[in-house]
Amino acid sequence: MNDTMKAVRLHEFGNPDVLRYEDAPRPVALCGEVLVRVRAAGLNPPDFYLRDGYRALPPEWRPDPVFPLVLGTDISGEVVALGEGASRFSVGDEVYAMVRFPADLMTGSGAYAEYVRVHETELAHKPDKIDHIEAAGAPMSLLTAWQFLVDPGHDAPNPFQAFQHQPVPLLGKRVLVNGAGGGVGHLAVQVAKWRGAHVIAVASGKHQRLLGELGADAFIDRTQVAAEAVAQDVDLVIDAVGGPNMERFLSVIRPGGRLFLVNPLGFSGHDEASERGITVSSMQVRSNGAQLQETGRLLEDGTLRVVIDSTFTLAQAAHAHRRAAKGGLQGKVVLVV
Image (cartoon, rainbow, N blue to C red; front, side, top):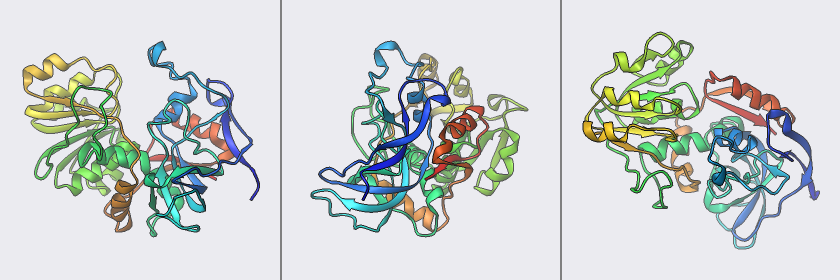
C-alpha cells in the first residue's frame, strides 16, 4: 500500500477557498484502531467552524492549530488494516463512524481523505441496505438525535451545563422539531416519531412534503408564520438551529416540559424557563460505535432514512462547503471519495 494518499487539508483558517486537495501522508492504525479506506465523508457544522478557526468562540476557546490539518468526522468505507490489539472488525468489513469527536474537535479528525484511522470502539458495521453515501451522512446527525432523545450513551462531564442531559419518554408526547429539514432535524423527526411522539416539524415550505413522508404529524412553514405564534402546549422542543432568540420557544412549552438545544451558545432564557417550570438542556455529541450499530438496524429496516441534499467529489470540498453555507439544506451534504 502506498504511503501517501489524497486528502483535503487546511494550511490556514478562512473561507472555503483555503481547502486544498493534495497529497498527504497515509495514516497508520495505532493500538486498538483500524485503517479505513474512505468511500464517502459527510459534512457537519463543526467542519465549518474549524475551517473558519472557530472565530465565533471567545478567543481563549479557539484552537491553537498545527497545520496542515484534515477536517471531517463522518465516514463510510471498508477496513483495510488492523492496528495492534484490534479484534472487533476484519479486513474487508464495510463500516461507518464518527471519528474521534469531540476529542479532535479543534484539530480535525481526518475524514476528508482517502484513508482514516479509527478506534474500533467508534466503528459500526455499515447497514447492508444503504450505500456509503447515506451511511456517511448519518453518524454525527444521527448520534446527536439519538443522544438527545433516546440515550446519551456516556456520563462524561457536560461542557454546557452543570447537570447531565436526560432524555424523556416520548410516547404520546407533543414534540416540536425546529430546523426539521436539516441534518439533525430530519433524523430527530424520525426518532421522535419512532418513539411514539406526535411530531410538529418547523422548516421552510420546500421541506413540507418530505417531512410528511418522514412521519411529521404537523408542519409549520417558518417563512410564513412564527412557530411560537401557532404552536402551543408542547411537551418538548428540540431546536436544531440555534442562533439568536432561542428563548421564543419557551412560550409554546407547557409547564414541566423541556427545551433541548443542539447549539445552546447564546441562549439567555434560563430565568424565564425557571419561572415557567421548563427544563432547558443541552449536551455534546460523542463518538459511539455501539450506538451506531444499534441505530444501523433502524437504517437497515427503513425505520430511519438519511436524506442526502447533494454530493461532491473529495476534490470539490470547497464547493461542498459553499453549498452548505448557502443554507436551506435538505438533509446532508456528502463527499464521495
